[in-house]
Image 1 (cartoon, rainbow, N blue to C red):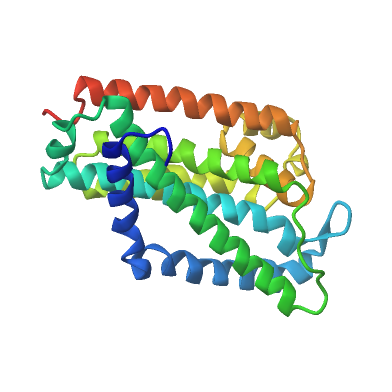
Image 2: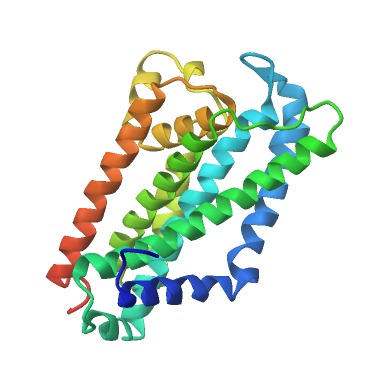
Length: 263
């Protein structure tokens, strides 16, 4: 990692090894969950729903949304759990007393969590492609905008890794983390257009949907995959980049203040 201090690289490496060494806990659950998602929503329901827009099979339509769901959940979960677990077992103080700056410390946690989110997103994409390959009625998936997709997926995972840092600092016990992920993050993603197109909504519901930040994430990743979008793709990318920068700055400020760390 050129340009990063040895301490930052070491902390990033430690956080990555923490989940890479436990693939059954990290990568197997989203793999199994998404096999079920694609089997039920993509194949069974998808054959009855038909296609969307320009003859896009429903299984391809939901693929980008499921990738976002996996990247968001895992980016958030890794950062929040890592921060909270360090607080709970009081070993995070070793990191805080190291020569790393507050920004470097925060960056290390966010970077490792972002990588986990991206890796899970790639795994889910591979599962979705495997379903299309195995089904004789579907053509092989091709990525419409690879570079755009890579940037968008990285920003999606990074944004929720940053939010995960806030969650890890705020949580008072492990139940807090479950509540945030299951009752806040996932519902927002599901109502962000994962299983339905935004232009299927009318009037007030369509307008209110833009208050949900997940709308921009799903639309950006779907554009990268399929060249299908409701919003301006560069607007979506700009919103993701701006939101990530703002939340990261909040993370640094909270760590510097000692919020949740010195209480």
